[in-house]
Image (cartoon, rainbow, N blue to C red; front, side, top):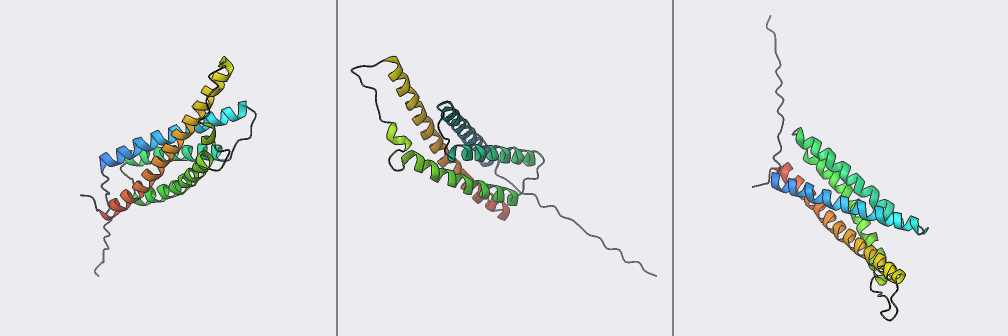
Length: 179
């Protein structure tokens, strides 16, 4: 009696990620997430010290930037094991893109929105006739908050664009579309 033997061959697909672009993306996103985490944490502590209410955007962006750092750490773990899959990257980047875009829209409203926005207080200068140390300290603190808020807004723009770029890059890696 003849025996039939079934042989299955499992082929594991290897994805070729462009190293320079992936490393650049990782560095820029770590910087953007860290800046946003630091700025919004600082603004939260300022709000607490002044015993003012905390706008929802501050803890929201702290959480989102922390999630992005966790996502990057997971990506670094997958890269070190050579198991970085484009599907994982597209899914994570899309989720973070939507969250960052929401934060970007709200930050722009808080910064440049209607009267009472942060930017409307950024142009005020102390009275040059009677400058005292308290008035100068308040002005410097106000200037620092305005600068921090603008920096966070700029890094949110960069992070949102880079998350979109990562989705496109992962799609190209999945299709083997890199030259």
